Image (cartoon, rainbow, N blue to C red; front, side, top):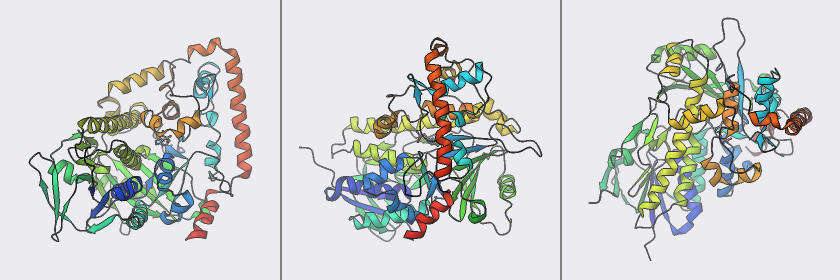
Length: 525
Ligand code: TRP
């Protein structure tokens, strides 16, 4: 019998650290002694986060928490889409903003072909102009009207995720994990003792503590104190795929009473990048993600201040520099990196927290014993690599296909980026009218209940279609097969009509997002 891992030390107490501590504690209970060490002097990066729907199923359900249990503690609000504003083109002086939605949930199938392809056929051959997100889903107009994805009685009517304050989530999970027996140490790392084979023996701390463990989880953020600094694992810089490397973030008060609360994240294209807008009750988090190669910090600050009409003397701005890329290996010897110490992509598609719990899920799946079988470690690393590189490609595709060309930044994005073969292949597939990523199963509910399958097919045909069609970048031709199937086309038309009916019904029964959130937070806070 191989010896079991008995102790785990997690370094870092941000979202990654506390998500790891609580999940491992739930997964292995008292079979594992878990210690989390965090330095209270190090500011947490969390600035108001947007998530994706499987957070509940993959993470909170696993911990045994319903939405009602955690949402009120984290100032959480709903997110049913990302609204991409001015990504199609830069509006001229006096012109209104242009926008499209990247919605959650899958476009339904008709005769084993996604409805998006019948939509493309209508556009290309019938001269129709209805936007893809409005034709193929039922909820776009409901989001325009700022309606809640849940009925007053809590019934879910849309696929949605959440916005919240990541620091509150970390604090909430800390209480939970400590209650479950996780040991919490507040101290700063001084030194990492290595064994002769190069793995980690112990961490020694400023106040004199020394912490040995069988397994170490590096959640120390961008600095990668264990994985990069102590174990010297190289970070593969991918700034040749994505130019943005900086952000200016702030919290901005908002008059909800007057304007309502938007049930979506916005991504507003700017001269040298884009700005996120994450609405929560009473305020929204916002940040300008830009490329320092094309804009100075002062220029970016000026554009950001102008966008929201901030008072330059009063606004509290958080200036962040980030690294785009991933470690060559996320797991090396007895050290697993999770969170910013492992990999980072600009938050354009809300992948930050997803990368954390996906890595934790994979860690539990591949959890080793003291022999640290290299096959387990290699499999884990392959999963992380695939997850990251696919997401990088999807995010990069936004920059490749936009027709914005108003600044050097946008022009360089079209002509100077390194593009993976996998993405080139997807772009060609789309252009030829084919389904971009074939789904593993056509049954949406089983598809969405199986995280294993979802993980490997994370960016679906629907995601690519929302993005490409949303940017007005259409296939060169409709899927030829459809021309031979008039019955299927007829059925698709009936489905389009049915979606409209659903929209109309929901429009009269859903409460506003603001009213729903007031109720949710009002009762429990
Ligand atoms: N498969 C993911 C989902 O639908 C894809 C995704 C990630 C996504 N970020 C998103 C979809 C933002 C819409 C908006 O959950």
